[in-house]
Amino acid sequence: MDKNATRYSVQLYIYDLSRGMARNLSPIMLGKQLDGIWHTAIVVYEDEFFFGGVGISSCSPGGTVLGPPDTVVELGETEVSEEIFMDYLSSLGESTYRGDRYRLFEHNCNTFTSEVAQFLTGNSIPAYITNLPSEVLSTPFGQILRPILDSIHIAPPGGNVINRGRNN
Image (cartoon, rainbow, N blue to C red; front, side, top):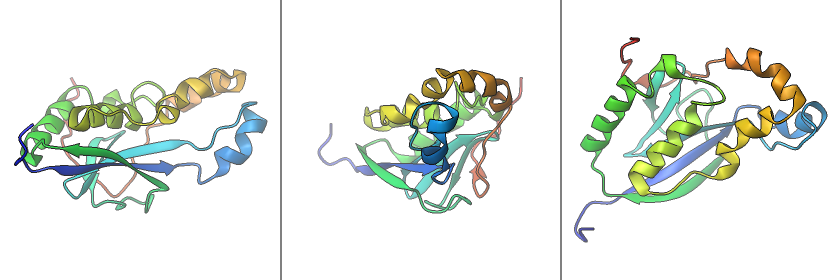
């Protein structure tokens, strides 16, 4: 790496969509403890980037209706310029991360942040986040709920869509 290259901090913003209810209700409903229902976003270049049912979006850090994150994880630094990053996001938004490709269990905000974290820093996001879908689906109640939950498309309001992509 070039010692004179500009380095940018990369953070993972973690939100509990259940606002603490998962911690209280999961033992009863699933028979196992879940600490939250996680939504994640990458914060870099003074913006927050996330994936949901409308595709890749951005906003000021903490600028969605979810408010400030419950937890912030420092993922490291990147030398990737903002211009290269935005080209990368645009490419993802036209292919892999179009809104119509969103799937709550298999292809969601957390798979997006995991891929983007790897691209920017070479680091992964915490396994307790990426393992959450398999944790839920490993329970009988999770299997019963799956058809209902599969129809849910999460897209926190307050972001600007990066690239709507084509639906073909």
